[in-house]
Image 1 (cartoon, rainbow, N blue to C red):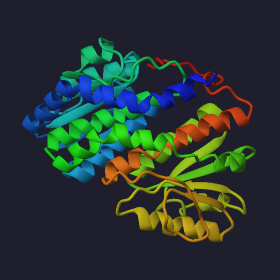
Image 2: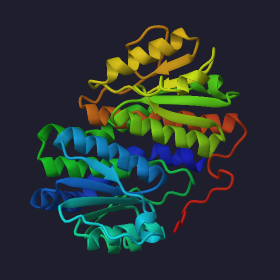
Image 3: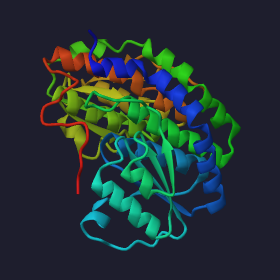
Length: 340
């Protein structure tokens, strides 16, 4: 029988289609509320994989609308009880369970500070959904594997869909509408070549830039969660500022590159690292001395980046089993983490 993680990865195209259908009204309402508010700044509240979805949304909002986005540390509310001045702000709070006390407390504080608060949550009703001005059910369905996959993807897609409504951008709306199809294509990609390389590896760097850096961050977390493997995500512009010192011959590197304006710079860095002897893989046809990984060209730079996570999820589930672990039940982890 396939693992729960594998089953949930395979459900992603259907889960995204369900979100875009059943939560369409809530997504449109959120976009309209943001147009009315016209925030000068956006803040996000999340942890773990949900925080990586927020990180992706940060780049998407900044690129699409030019509005700065910052992550708020939940301890500002839950520990420090610091008042916030967010009268001209919008806040996105993201959580699979909607139950973590510090995320709920921070969302309450943001709303009390004047922000328009939106909850992207897989459990409605929930404490987080109740705390926010508007709650959007991300419609991922039950997620039983400890490592989040479809809830991460649906959170990111929900954020993109809200952004498309907010910005009234036809091209982005069309790209989001085609995501179920493109995720289906991505499921067919095989990154199994990485399993042999990483099966006995101790460390891994995962590079990206812009929206793809958020995906690299999520990928690195999955390596730690499911494979007990040290993995770090870096901007391809930052890896030379110290981390490159650890790169020796055969050191494994995955470079996430989307079809956007950063693709060439990521490919150039991958080429440089391959020249140092690193075992370098890239989701691009660009670069020299690097090993290409399959990708789906979606026709839009934001969705192009997001779809990269699916073949990675498939690969890391294989890698976990190859390293002798159970990807459904990582050691010392549980599905719902309630931090204070």
